Image 1 (tube, protein in one colour):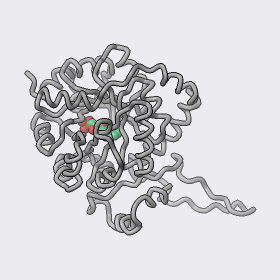
Image 2 (cartoon, helix red, strand yellow):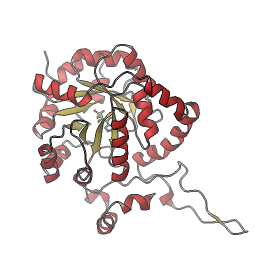
Image 3 (cartoon, protein in one colour):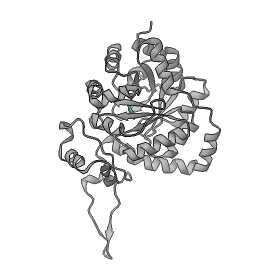
Length: 335
Ligand SMILES: O=P(O)(O)OC[C@@H](O)[C@@H](O)c1c[nH]c2ccccc12
């Protein structure tokens, strides 16, 4: 699979990236390999059952890789509990999807600030438990009352303590803002599960998915009426994503300002990417851009806005507050 991912890059570029340490090359793409959580299996060869030794390289190289390797197990279990045929019946019965991107653009036009995607997030690998007193429905209702245009709901169970059920519960409680399913999506089954649970949009992470997979999953999303947020975290990734044919009415882009290896947040990353020629092209082609992660203050919001982002994705700074409604109002400077 690693070979497959690398093969989507020109050979010289891949070699160049591989030979430079990641720290000195902020634009290096993160190539997520796909393996079972225990790595590649032992390779017995011959009657003596001689085993080719496992190398260090057979462990996840970063948290994103670890999460993605575990996904394979999680998806297999989900399919056992809910086979595809039954999931497709749920999908048919789902309520029509809402216009996620339209809601963000509408809010931006109304308030003159980036449209807010407020995240319902209990925990994360970098922060541990952020909100021990976690009630997803109460938080979602408070975000909506505070003026969030859209919500993002973490569904990853093992690393973020999320659940697809939270999407259902939030919808069932009458929350009307469009919902993003925040998941590490690697196959279409997860898209169907997201839509059947009430999501209106899904996240696709460029660092996880080569362009061939992105193209397929974007198409499959459109088939089940899901809009898409494609997340990049470097200029190189943005350049790659822009090679795809994407409809700005159905696909928006996001810049994750959190480094996937160190977890450090740097809002300058947002500026650097938006100022690049790929960043300019994004704006020319009319894509809505979201700045993601590490946004804590109205000053941060203003900074991300002046880089050219019409949306922001905010989790920790809102979810850790006892009164998330006030936290939203404070962040957007709504009296
Ligand atoms: O809690 P923060 O720093 O405001 O970040 C929110 C969001 O950007 C972050 O949760 C996120 C961005 N991309 C992701 C991909 C998967 C899981 C989580 C994320």
